[in-house]
Length: 577
Image 1 (cartoon, rainbow, N blue to C red):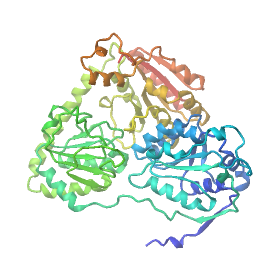
Image 2 (tube, helix red, strand yellow):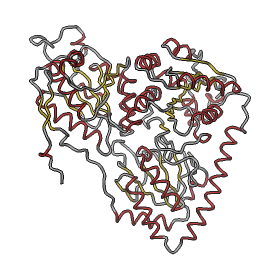
Image 3 (cartoon, helix red, strand yellow):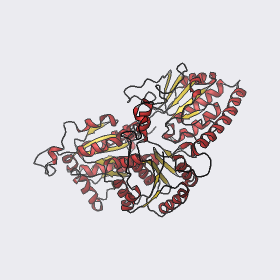
Image 4 (tube, one colour):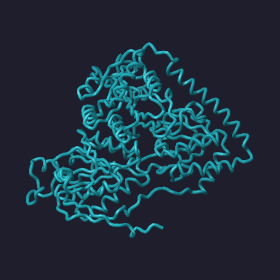
């Protein structure tokens, strides 16, 4: 048994609370601080300026000129590395600009050590007291109130003697199950307060609380239900956030001969060519399913839109299977198992095999039939989307996706925000596909791809996104940061010059309404479209507009050559729908 008291203490040669906090964060494994500085940062800036004298190891600062981009980069770095990072912004206004990115991270349980300065508490009497007029205008009664539902813990730093407890508790809660971003408020006086060094433990004494076991009785019950079912189904959107769960799901689904629907998937949950990969949406046979296993999926189907099997038993499994932070969620959960799928699925596979020991031929026959059916269905979907292997007459998102798929290689990482079409692409390795958060905060994809690239500098990282999402990403800020920090990714803008999601939603609610009969649906057009390729050029990158489907493959080659040479590249692809 590990004895925490046996750890050797370490001393950080910190002269201020800011130095101690940054030094401890680095010692605990935070490598980068994605920052957007303000008048609350003097002690932070002084800590970095004094590094040559202090000898302190601090997180590497990454300056990002917009807060949404800074937090999204920290989000992306975690996706690419599995390591929690930090972001810090300027008081209330910076916090407000960060909120969209924090909502995305919270819904995806992505740990981020997020902090914001606080307007100086004192009006005089301290070197850090208020000294500009905004220090009155930016103060709030409850600064953390605006983000409390977007984090898993919030606190305001009071004194330097708290540093170790605050940092260790914050990181443990962020990295536990289900996890997510934390918030720490930091008054300017507190950050600048003098400190005569900080003695701390060599490693944290507060470990994250994670699901490490399996309820075997519940597993046996689930195995009995699935083994008795004739048409069972697995639904998942983000079990692949845990890389080990991809293989666990692949092994179980094939052994049990159970189809898997990756509904609104924002991770690679199952290899594209897996025999039980049944697509990304529900067909008319969904109503005939007689047992459903839901894995790590906050909204497994749409009750108002899908004809779903209301009498089938439903098993909800995941680190937060009932999505406790969503105010109302009425999906059935006849059996609920709080676990990590990577641990539960192997146990379920063994239990299922025991339950079907006398019916192996029956399972094998179902596996054979489903394998053929899924292969045929994948080919049919591809044909419906592409019409063949030749270039279409007009540019389509499916054609752009297929062309990208031909050149990306199996090791490339795609960060997708309402861009590429997965049914025409191949993914086989965990961590090669990431999609947008269930929170739907636009502007995530571009900065997240930059964070992924920072974590995986030797791999090709491609961001695919719509024109609306690109504009939401504060592209000038993103491209400037990419140039400043030498982050070379390929960005492909699927530019259809409209809010397609808004048009689709209106058509769903008013299928025969006036908006559908209008020549142009109100409030959906994004014309005239900016020359997005010129924006990246203005920031030192490579940009090109493409409208001819025949020219796209060559344009991709040119852009990839630029990325390989270390230059960020963007293709502004004009699609027809």
